[in-house]
Length: 51
Image (cartoon, rainbow, N blue to C red; front, side, top):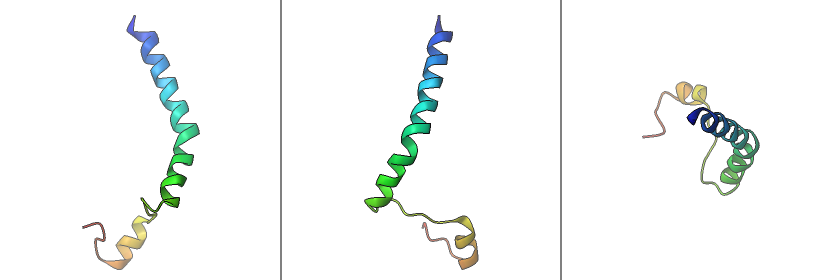
């Protein structure tokens, strides 16, 4: 009984991530609520900018 529910929930979750995650992330970048950084930049600077 729970197996079809789990399968459909997994499919719905994967579709939501696939279709909405990129667009939602771009909106957050545009609103400056998140910033892009890379781990190599943080390691090269020698400081932890998140704290």
